[in-house]
Image (cartoon, rainbow, N blue to C red):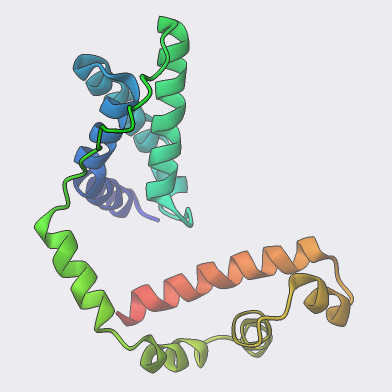
Length: 173
């Protein structure tokens, strides 16, 4: 991936998750300034690993995990622990208007129309693996035994298959 593409990916990741990660950290550490500092550290790590994050299967999950680890390290250093919520306290999470619209649009998508066009672009071995695992719901153990390979090898092939499907979807849509 080119440097410009990495920068664009990183900027999109920041725009889409900056506020939510900040709120998450604020709930964890109960300190506005500390949450701001931790947030900067989270995105510094993301910037340093942007080339890996672009290929990561769940970059937002990576951000949350990094935020969690930064918060726990901070709390250990402060010898604090997060305050438990009382039963009558309710955590409010603000849902942005565009998130509601995105969810409504997603519900209207008939993914079956698109699955065939994506699967047809896969190689024959990938198509077979896709069919066995996702359509017939065969366990990894059964697929591995039939192919005469280890379960770990099948899991790795499934991971690579998901990455290929993700690339195909990005190019098509």
